[in-house]
Length: 338
Ligand SMILES: [Zn+2]
Image 1 (cartoon, helix red, strand yellow):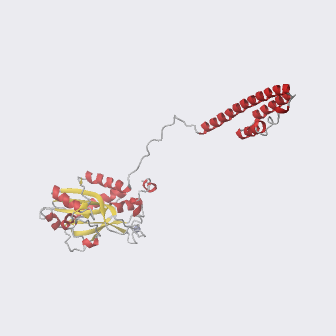
Image 2 (cartoon, helix red, strand yellow; image 1 turned 60 degrees about the vertical axis):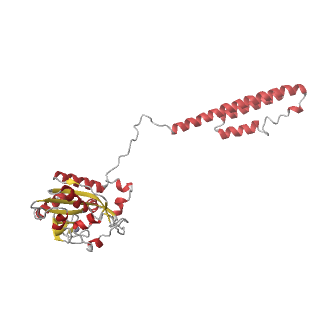
Image 3 (cartoon, protein in one colour; image 1 turned 180 degrees about the horizontal axis):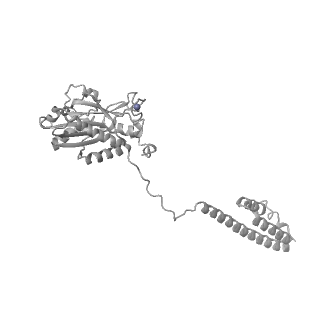
């Protein structure tokens, strides 16, 4: 009698185990059947007659073992299904090509510098480099800038404790080029320069210039104009229109400010050119006889022109960059555009 009840209970439990949809449902069946207040626990074998007790005890043990086995099997099925689902989501296609290294890009100032170097080397110019920490002599004295001259105040210089300085322009490389190579000389010198300035959208303490110089016999302003027009036409990919205005720089005589016809409006006037139709671009001129003499070149035999180009400024003009601080920001969102 008791044995039959136990077997019925076992069958019902086995069916519930089979129908359990997940681990939580299975756990509920276990509590209902095998728990301390579960259906198997309600059989109090101790109250039965001795012969019945033996049979019932055996049936109970069998039922417990059968059910525990069934729980275990079902649990493994759930675990295996869960694993399969996870593997399905984590599946990788190992036949796909690897992403590979991400390509970088050149900085806009480097792009302009490379183009100008290519152009000038094709015209017979040498590309020279010079130190960023300069002597006062090369940065000022040898460029005909006397000790008390206002030009030294105009350029806010980073002076170093040993009396040297961070070069304020690339012009000292002219001096080094003349000292080392002598005339005739065709050279350009791109590089980083430093000014002790407040930084804002149009001023940086660190920026890039490109210096150019040609020394030969019978060099005139016509040569200067030819090379400047060639340079600007190549950079801006159009026939550049330029003009010279008198300008004072101690290292040239005569000295000029070179303007380019506004690239935005083409002449009539706009906000970029302040309604003038022209944009001031670079100082230039014929090399001052004192500068030649100081570097051991006879000004009665040799003459030359020199110009200083703001590479940073040129890059900003060509790419329409309105904040100089972006250039040294290291921001990849900015740099990836070039
Ligand atoms: Zn304009």
